[in-house]
Length: 130
Image 1 (cartoon, one colour):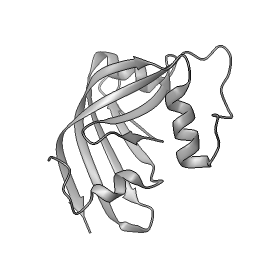
Image 2 (cartoon, helix red, strand yellow; image 1 turned 45 degrees about the vertical axis):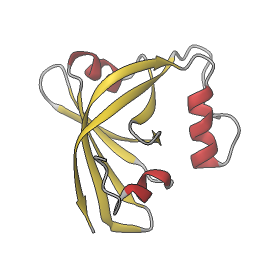
Image 3 (cartoon, one colour; image 1 turned 90 degrees about the vertical axis):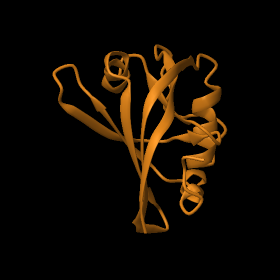
């Protein structure tokens, strides 16, 4: 498995992943997101109007840095590629993230005009500390 057993527990915690993408002019773009882990791939939600989504359409490489919320000196970095973009029109994924991170059944900030998608990342390299 690409994710080391020593740090796999971080993926099940209420940790935030800082996701870095490459913008259209080669500049890095980074911001924290909620994420899900299915045992082999990372998933995170975006809307189709977000820069991060546009970035991954032109350069599929991403890097995620995830600090252990119980020990910020322990982290997992995952480099990977976007292998799929799934429709989340029924809000099932973002609602599951609201449950994980907020303890709510529904994502409270959904706007009717939002076109929500799920970006799926296949890890290709990991680095750990702590």
